[in-house]
Length: 153
Image (tube, rainbow, N blue to C red; front, top):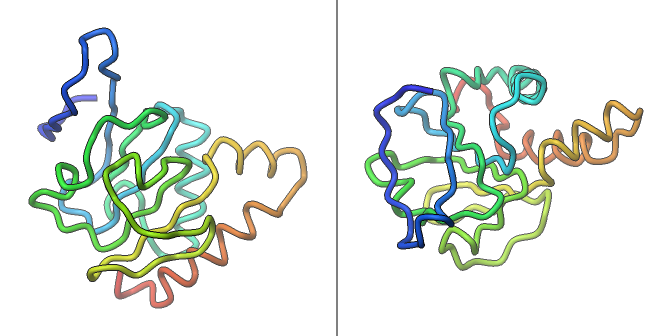
């Protein structure tokens, strides 16, 4: 992926520095954190979820992939962006240097932003393919709380 977004990662030995991938609009007000690396099937699933909320992931969100072991601080991610909504699929907020209480599937409003922690997208997708709906329904209800008025996102 070719883009101009630059991230400073925590000082780590070279062999421990992850390969982060990103996609979407750098001007977006929505940050989506994903543990997996870019994968067409999961990207399509993510797009379907958000389009139901009238959010176009490619235009309205900035996605950061490969965050299974985050080495980026939220302040670095947010620098110059001021994301209003942060949706984390399996990336613990404390791993990004954020210290606040949260529960999975329950949006938290904090400092003019809304944060949501959910299960990894691959887990939600796997459950849906197997006919289960529990995680998808929890995600949907949480996202509806986060984005109650689609035209105002």
